[in-house]
Length: 284
Length: 251
Image 1 (spheres, rainbow over the protein chains, first blue to last red):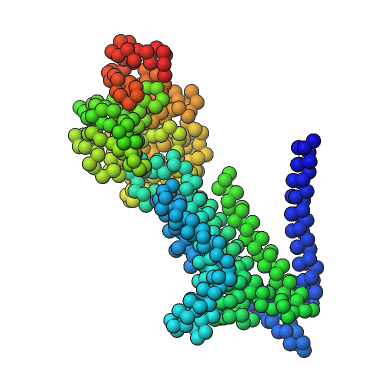
Image 2 (image 1 turned 90 degrees about the vertical axis):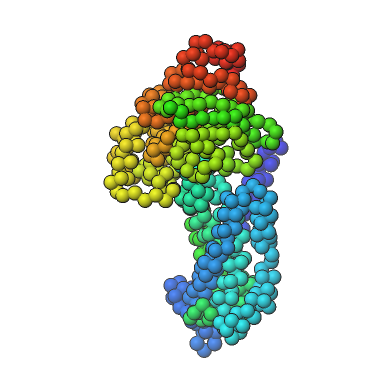
């Protein structure tokens, strides 16, 4: 009897999650239909124009889609040279040792710092550096946002990569050592290829994190509604334009912002599924 | 001629406690020597001391002398030692990301040794013929090694070790994860390989030691209790413990 009650409780909880998710998607779809009906789905996705003047009101998401992809991919690129060595350090070279768990927990601490704190740090520490390097007059832009974003996603990329590296069976590594390989050769020719799809998945997941990151990016990207013309140009990401403009938006503009929200949701969902697929492949 | 000589070899995992205790023995060329004994007697530990596999893990200490052709392996470059003394493990461990062809050549690839195309083909063919795998895989050379059966995988691993033309082949219970037919196949193979290579094999299977080895060591609690020709050991063991082990009193 108790078992049955517990089982139905669990069932209820699981069903609730599904209903909640469906509800979120439903309300996003319903409230974005205005924008999609007015501009058409493809038109909305491919138009870079964001004009809120009542006489020529027109909204398109392309600038923000490009801004999002630029900052995220750049952040991923910047994060690799830091996260990969950390992963090798904790998952291979110093695996199981105290120093590895110390480094691992410090890196994981990075994941616990609230986004707004990264934003503040970027605003008051990184931005002046960008200015003094003469890259950009005010220090805002895609580059500044990407650098902070890169630091924010290091823990996600490195902890997963480290886990996949340490999952490489000892049998294989011993086999390689027994043939006279050095440690570096074992890592590059045996461990890395064996863990490659997992490592790829870790980085795709990190990319997923970067896509949706809002607060720090909003504080640093400059918030201009255009396709960034270069890495030091300002722009907006999908998340930052919503954060910036939802407060005073209504009518068609609000619907357009919600449509951008829906698109962001879809993009991250696709990215995460790709990562899940890649991980499934190594497990089988 | 003596290929391998062990002088007072001790291995310890924790300081002051020897898992292998003062083992001395000499092994001649083109022979098969079996190391037998109950679990935990130190037979694998002794075998892995020879190609310095213990150094991959902290806190394992090996002392004494291990002479390969008169030179102490403990003072050589460990990579060189491992190239000269190949190893086959308990469970087949072909590299899953490499094809059969690449697996055979893995030793060269891992060591960064470049070979011409003809040389590569020749090494692959000879090594696979050596383990009687050539006819079975010659048409599927580009398939991953992990598609083979367990017994074929183990023969591939032997071929991989042989490809480097080692002076010594160390085998750590190479058939314990295999079915009887594959085991039989590998035993026959070892008898043929003896013509070209010197083999030291750890086994907990007494019958296997009796079938294939020329010399046998019996280890117990880290000590080398007895080392003699296999024939002598199985007919007239010199030590009571050997006799008890061989007659199944313990083990």
